[in-house]
Length: 145
Image (cartoon, rainbow, N blue to C red; front, side, top):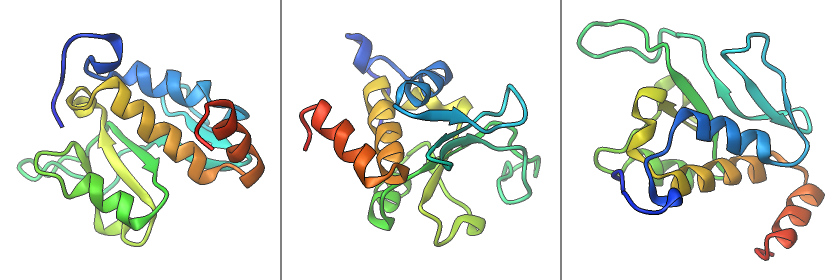
C-alpha cells in the first residue's frame, strides 16, 4: 500500500478519517474513558479502539512503547493475514494478539493507506462486530447485499 494523490478517496488517510468513519457507522457509541483514546463500539462490541502504550508493541530500536496504536477488528484470520503480511504494510500484530481477529495500526503510519482503503477496513470492522440484522440493513442500504 502506498499513498496516492488525486480524488479525496485516494488521498492518504488521516487519523481524522479513522474517527469520521467509525463515528459515521450506525449505532456507534464511544465507550472510551479518555477523549484522546476512544473505543468505538456497535451493540456493546468494540470494532476500533485507540490503545494505551503496552509492552507488546515497542520500537525495535529504542524499546520504547508505541503510544499511537489503534486496534481494528477484522472478519477473519485470512483478512488479518492479508493486511499484516503485505510488504511494507503499516498494519501489524503482536504475540499478544495471536488468535484475536484484529490488526494494529500506528497513527504515525496511517497515511500509508488511502482514505478509501481505510474506510473499507473500518466498515468491515464494524460489519464483523454488528448484529446480523444491523449488518444486513447496512449492506442493503449500500447496495452490497
